Length: 228
Image (cartoon, rainbow, N blue to C red; front, side):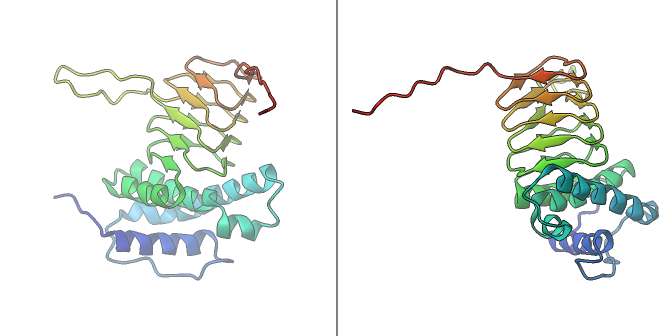
């Protein structure tokens, strides 16, 4: 039978991870010994720490409203979701069942940001505001990518096997380095967004985009009339 830890145990584990990643802001804690994780995970904690700190750096670089590093660590949803995701992703790579998805769902419930633990995300990743962001299982994201609230990196359709079950095939977007996606945009299917591209807000995108592009939705006509 697959081991299923309690939610309280996972929360204590993430409290330990917060202390490891940000010792200047959170007290050091012992890892909960009753959590059954592979020994290969523990040497990877410094790598997780390095990556999450690059995400904090990305927020500092991209948001002029930030006053200092502590503000990002203590109050921005990016920090919480990326500690959970990067920990969960490492456990996923090590073949740990269930726990990776449980960890990302804990972050989802607290931040409104839904990242599948199998998604691949490079360093210096920034989600500004964040509510409603969805990143699907086979998504690949490069370095220095910025997403705003309401962005969906999802699948357009599925293929089914002979028994009617959806096939687990690559079906989510690839975002190369230095891509920015503005709010409420959906990028669907196995499409590639070339490096240094900007995708404007409220765009529905289901095709490849070459590098160094700007993608904008046609501006609707705005009419302002006197109520009288």
